[in-house]
Length: 377
Image (cartoon, rainbow, N blue to C red; front, top):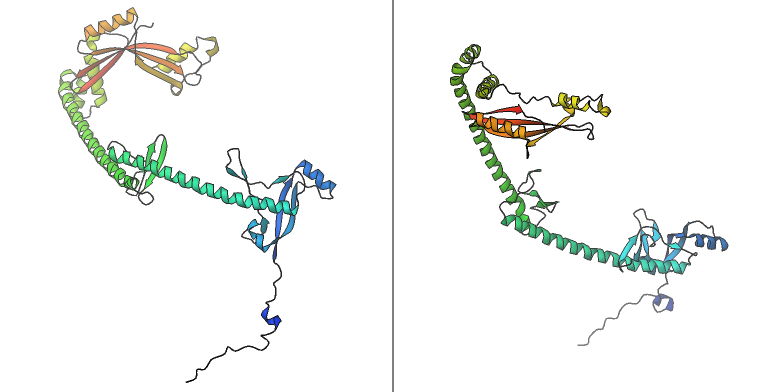
């Protein structure tokens, strides 16, 4: 049997040279805007060559299609030669970004601009490569730091997250070396991911402990108040005035009045000594008016600053008073106190120092205090 060979069909005219050679496309180019600066020398050179001598030079050049990598196009379709921002090496041989266009001391040629754009293009890639490497290194360092902090937090039950905002199972904030670090269950990995849940658990446990402590303190305060009421119910009928006894029986005697009566009775054995009066504003005003610069000084209670502390030394008269009060009230605590008055409106004004002897005594559920005026230095 003979085989049949199928021949490929040919179109008419396919054998001509015009059909075999594709028509050449015209070379394509893109019209691109260029901007740069001229220094003063460059502006002079521009004027000498017939230019406009402007500091900011703007022109348009044709960039062939094979060099379009030297062109940037914004979202509005404006094409510009890659001269701004520009990238250069700093003193440490690192590529830095400069947002201003380049400055020339002489009007550059088109080839000069293309060379500057090409160099800028290469350095731009180096710049972003270095930034990506530095960012990756920063992220890795930060991740390792967060991991160390998280491990320390998880292994130390005494550590706590910031209470404001309150930690949740998904987010919390720790303070490490005066720096606030936020941990999230969704954004962290490893031990750092477990920090929010553990911080929230500790926070809620602390709240329960605090509520229990407040409840116990409240119960203790109520019990102490009831004890004070029972004590006064027994003491007033024995030592109170007739009027106080009547009001106590009716249940309308104020506790403050009853405590004052108890205080007077307790410290009555110390005699009629001068008490320390809380009249610091009047005392300081009178003291300041003794100085020529403060003859018209007016000191109010709001302007009075008082600093009180235990004395670290005593004169003979002050020590004699302390010993006398200790002998008269042997079950009391006697302390020499210093009260320093100053005028907050004028820190340079002289200050006044007054001494007192504080006597503290325990009577039943009450802690009674009485301060007597002590001799000055």
